[in-house]
Amino acid sequence: MSDLTPDTSRFQRPDTPPAPLAEPLPSGVDDRLGGRLRDLITRPSRLMDHVGARPQWWVPGLIIFVVMIVFSWLTLPVSGPEQMELMRDSKLMSMMPEDQWQSMYDDAMNVAPGKRVLQSLTGGFTGWLTVIIFGFILGFFARMSGGRGTFRQALGVTSWAALLPFAVGPLVKLPLVLATESVFEVNLGLAALLPGSGPGSPLFQFLLAYGDFLTWWGLAVLVIGFSRVFGLARRAAIVSVVLPWALLSLIPLGLTLLFM
Image 1: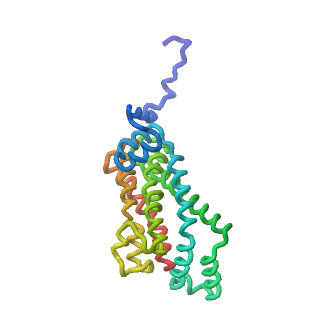
Image 2: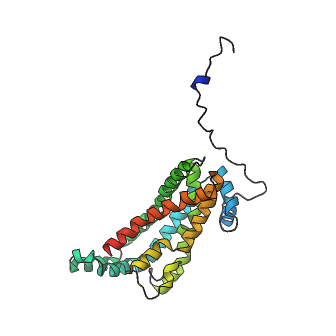
Image 3: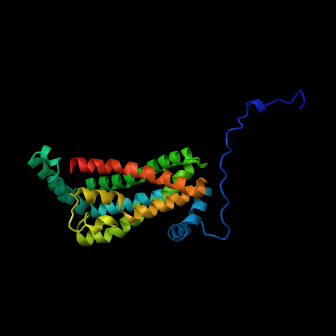
């Protein structure tokens, strides 16, 4: 090394791992939206190879946003009164005057157009925001488990897998809800095996939170995604995905059981 060449070796951090490199896209495979949606069902590992190279997390996010808006808009005349009827027998109702409940029930039966639009937009925004927050949480757990991916990739993996419970689920439930005129009677999971138990049953609420088949499918796709994109061993990927999901699901379940 000459005297004119600065020695920068002492400023380097040899213990810092290099940034993860995106895998090249498989040749001859459709990476457009239609191909990704098809791979989500038939070849999730190939989908996640594409997601690792190009996350495009906003694409499934927009799909979830639109589907949730449509689902909320069409089912609000059913879900609103049904939730109020469930609320009447809850602990929360004991702290509310009867005339106040009746007023809220009348509003649910006859939702003003502006309020219906606002609630539908809120449902779409809440669904998308939930996926984004969950993506950052899973990215943190994956990084803590030794994964070498970026948070942008974590958002991509989470958003594409979330299409199963947040988009496919509502689309499957929609005609069933409109036909039965009930939100609580339509379940795509273990809660459907309890025909004698209503939404007021703690067991029903537990199975509703942890027994949805499309949610399990989405979790399996998440495990595949974090394993392939972040380079995690399968066991580490399972822990990084299932543990945060199980803990976060306790929050709405606990609130429901508290005021039920």
